[in-house]
Image (cartoon, rainbow, N blue to C red; front, side):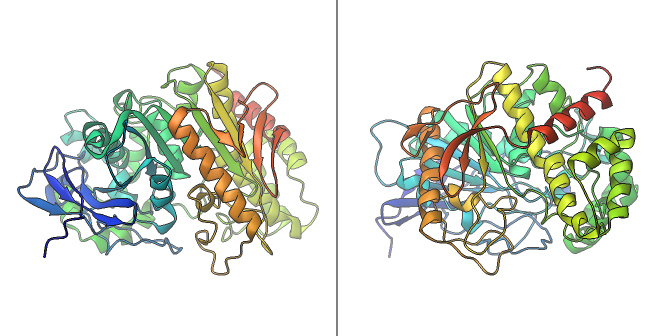
Amino acid sequence: MTDRTAPIIETLSGAVRGERAGEIEVFRGIPFAAPPVGPLRWRPPQPVAPWEGIRDCTRFGDDCPQRSVIQLGSRAPGQSEDCLTLNIWRPVGEPDAPLPVMVWIFGGSFVYGSAAEDRADGTSFARDGVIHVTLNYRVGLFGFLAHPGLTAESPDDFSGNYGLLDQIAGLRWVQDNIARFGGDPDRVTAFGVSAGAASISLLLTSPIARGLFSQAILQSPGAFRPLATLQDAEAAGGRLGDDIAALRELSVDDLLDRQKLLEPAMRSLTGARVLRPIRDGHVIVEDDRDAFLSGRFAHVPLIVGSMTDEGSAAVAKWPIDTQDAFAELLETTFGDAGPDAAALYPVENDNDARPALGQLFGDTQFTYGTAALARAFAAAGLPVFRYVFTRRRPGKPDPRHSEDVGYVFDRADLAPRGDDNHRYDQVDVALAGAMHAAWASFAKSGKPIVAGLPWPKYDDAGTMVEFGNEIRVRAGWRQPHMAFLDRFQSRADPAR
């Protein structure tokens, strides 16, 4: 029997049927591009083939193939290369006016992640009158392999960055179709965490992504890092072999086995990586640092922030357990600026090494990019709102990388990734409600309201909001460390 309450929307590719859950309607697994399989492996996303009839969109699509070291909470039925789908949550009924839209781009170091992750469920935003979208993109070797053979077959003379192109294709689909769901294509907020936030920061600089969203929220963005060149990434990709046709014939498992050939055991703290977005001359034409400092980026309102502990989880398995090993890392990373770094990250004995390593990783990979983005947007005269998240859950250490996600989605009850002993109390519930309300008000108006008051803009004093045991306005966060990294990065590029 046909469910007469099930919503049906006619998209440009065909009709889709979602499902109603109370006052929310959900559409899952809508394809926004052709399946990148067979000859379309390692090619830019292609238009989806139109379909006849009504397509059932009540189940999430597959995640991109990946091997994650932590539980993602994905509700996808499985993994496959046929993964370019998106999901939409919206309020029931026809709105009086088009609704604001938020598009979530997941994180996962560009090698794992899911648009079906439970902590990014859009129910809370839809209840607040915001249409929420999550989209998949290719990760790991499937999304970011550059190779001379792939470049040779490209009419645009590039390879790699397929995952970024997937995101662009998903955002274009939103521009073309979201009005049919009651959304306003002129009020699209792109937001994400970690690799998702880093992706958005790069899309802000990309000439082919211009106009696809009108504002952004970057949670712990990996920004202002050097990008690998196409040539460097091609050289790394060549380790897989020369024959692209043969590589396209490999099974998913074979490729996942080979991915470790491009994954270093320890990433460089100040150098470029290859299995992530690169400077390919087409999607990304310059380092984002250069683009932001020169004003060559999309001038949109921005929320950007970071956590107290951005690094300890990422370096848990690094073999840096002694004072000597940490001193060697500083020398290797900073050269003759190593003594300055040692003064900021003091290690008096072996027990100090791992905590200092976590701080150093977090500062170089996330906190510095957060601070630099806030300064660049403010210098361009744009409204930018910075935050730092310091709330310790009951019996837990400082909040780690991406723990703020559950709060943003008003789900203090959801455990952060990798936490099998979740604890929270009413302080967390209230904080989640306040953060969620701030994100929703920003999506609606570009002016976030936090705890009932306007969020003050970031300025030369470093004004920001602290989400901790209490919500308060403060100035500055790890400023001596940021100043050192700024000096080091500027010295590393004599052109500045």
